[in-house]
Image (tube, rainbow, N blue to C red):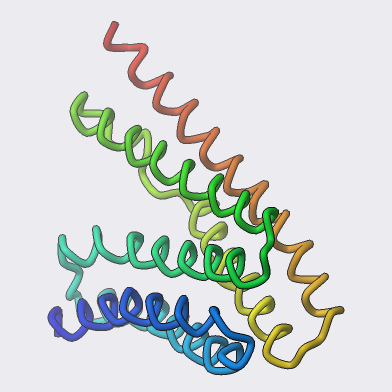
Length: 183
């Protein structure tokens, strides 16, 4: 069962690359939306199955959030390139910078035996859910060529950006508090 669950997670990375390529042409928006939705379903099911069948693996615990980030970033940068949107590209750059920063904090905390300082929080899970939902709305709006839906997605994109920055700040604060004890 663990192998199947990890394959679901790997499929999200594979789908991210296909979606990115589909976003290079307006003709690919509908299929990109469908595949993105499918990728979101695999995100739900790999976690659900791992918990239900007690098949949580170290690889899965590491790979699952990485697959989410790859999917989100490939879609953000695919949209930025195709729509020539500096704003979406800027948001993508902030998201990737935050992820690298939080990864560095996790490494620092692991080295100092303070891994609990950057343990995934409920708010960070909400952040990922909002990012995935926002990009779904965006892709749906593009697929049916509806500007109102795209504007709504833009609003949610800013909400997800705020939560992304906020959770990065909280992880930073927790790290500095926990590691201050070591000095």
